[in-house]
Image (tube, rainbow, N blue to C red; front, side, top):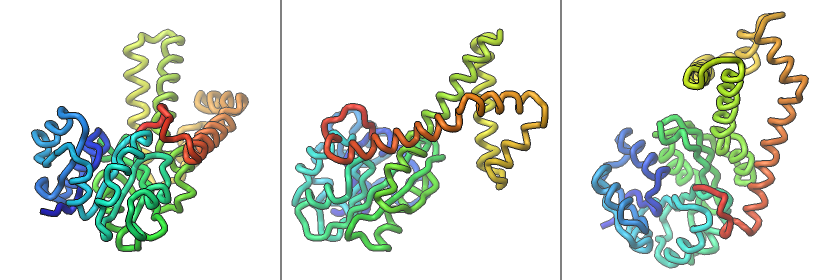
Length: 280
């Protein structure tokens, strides 16, 4: 039988995507097939999600109308070798592997003008609060891009960009949660140095980030306006902001994202299949 959705790589991100589409009623569990090279993950998908899970990537590729490649970039070449010649001409192939270009995938599938789309989700997708950017390869149509978009909309906001912008997306939203965690970590550390107990400092820092995130999500005001609403002239917040500005924190943040963007480009240019520091 054929399946509307096939997944190669039954990891955490694939699990989040499946939970999202099941919750949204986009697919039924019996319309999805997955494969993974480890038995515990196959068992988990079958037991917890009701999704058929097998070991053969080639079999999943042959049986799927849409194929999600949810593997680490350094594993992608082996996956492409395994499914070469098994993908149907009409199959929509969606990859979430950072740094692996659509051309690399297109050239490896062994069919003429394959329908390949790249996506860059981030980890909050696992909570249904993700941010995903998608980009079409050389041959995917507008309708196929729409179907790929719907796959992620169950768990995240989705924006469409050009493929050459995906490294910028990776730097901003793909890696972005780590920047937020780092800021919250440093805020808690400062609280400890100011005399608070560790558990209290961390509790306050976490809740502050959570509340600020809700305000960002629900309030239509600009980012600058939101900041200014809690920055009274001559007050404590203004003193902190001025200290950050004096230390060029704004420049450091922008420089950091450029570094992340540049690293993404380096990985896209040939070393990614052997790079251990890229995650799916």
